[in-house]
Image 1 (cartoon, rainbow, N blue to C red):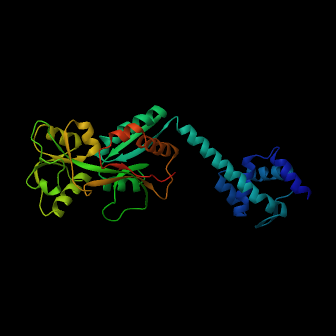
Image 2: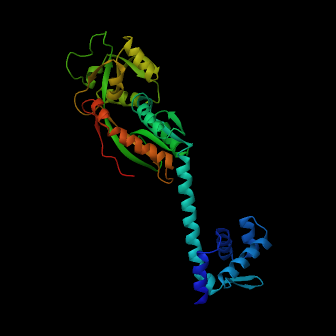
Image 3: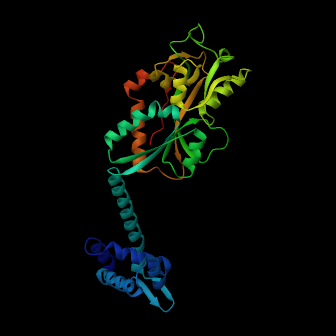
Length: 327
């Protein structure tokens, strides 16, 4: 038909996106005045643009009757094509904006204090080197707090310890690392045991330097001790990671810490016997909201960092990388 050929020709000529948007809105509402209100334009201006589009296409798009607006055959043919063009244009706009946002913008990452003292700084340095215009916002906290913050939309990604205790919101999680926990002690003090490995039972009556409430490591350690039949004795409690390491270095007691932290601390590290004293580190984001482009790039940098030979050399025996899910 002539009007179909006109439509095809007009796509390559002078039809503007604004006209297609006006047309699609009128087609959806079947009402010029209501469409004008939705588009925030004057109704005469909207009608004029539709008339211009019809002249350019060489066909009427609407049957106009008082109180009754209906699509003509030409309008029915144009509508799915117009919607596709508008959708493709929106997709292209978002992609271009995301590329531009990698020159500026921000990404929000949550992580437990133990990871902020070991894994996170190197990952953020690599990310900053690649995307210096992106502002990095780090929220340090326990896994349960981070999950709540993530679910509230205040974080893009979070490194958490899994499995989580209790009911968790709808999160997508990727297991990254199964990390060995060790007992840290001051090199200036006698070792906690004379053997190469320590057991949880050996912590009975040992002076423990303990983290503040809300730390995943506090809950993990106290639960392990109670499962072994005793209540742990604290010499000092309530500290953050740096404070705990300082108290151990001063000889105030021993502490259960991640192997990656111990490797950087200068403290003596005694591994546990068996496989019970390990934790799984996962990367989480909301299922219902796709992470923004900058967050996806941070995830990529994190995975590349974990797979780098240097990180592999730094991992303590018993700590191993897990096969991360693809993007």
